[in-house]
Amino acid sequence: MTAPPCINPSLIRQYLYCPAAAYYVIAGLAEPPTERMKKGKETQKEAVEAVAKALGAEAVEHSVQLRGAGFCGVIDAVLIIDGRPAPLEVKTTTKPRRVPTPHKAQLGAYMLAAQAHYGKAVQRGYIYYAETGETAEIPLTQDLKTLVLYTADKIRQIYTGHTPQPRPHPNKCPGCWYRK
Image (cartoon, rainbow, N blue to C red):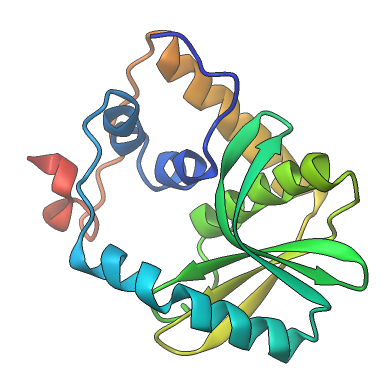
C-alpha cells in the first residue's frame, strides 16, 4: 500500500480509538454503515441549521469537501462566524462529561484542512451531540495540532506496511465489529 496524498480526518479519530481498527479501515475492511450512522445523516442538516443559528453564524456550508494541510474529507458543515470558518462535526451520541480526545483530534484535522481550504485562520471548531442537543467548542491549540500531525504520521506508517497492535480495552473490545 502507498500512503495517500491526504489523510481522512475520520481515520485520525479511528486510530486514536484503536490503531487496529484504523488498520482494518485502511485495508479495505471498514465496518458497514450501522443504523445509527444512517440515522445521523438524516438528522444532520436540521441539527447544523439549529447550531448555526444558536452560534450566530453569518453563513453555513453543508457537507463541505475539505482538502489541505495533508487532510481531506467531508465535514458535516462549516460555519462562518465573525468572518472565519469554523468546522462543525455532528455526532449522534450524547455529550460526554469530557469530549473524547479522538473527537477533538478528528475536528482538529478538519480545522487544519479548513485553514488551507479557505486561506483564513481557524481558531475553533464545534462538535454537536444530537442526542442531548449540546455543542462543545474546541479551540485549535498547539497541543491539538501536535496530536493530529503525530497521529497522521502513525497512519502513514500503516500505509507503508506497519501493522499496529490493538489496544485491549474491557469496555470497547467486546462490542467491536472488528473483533470478528
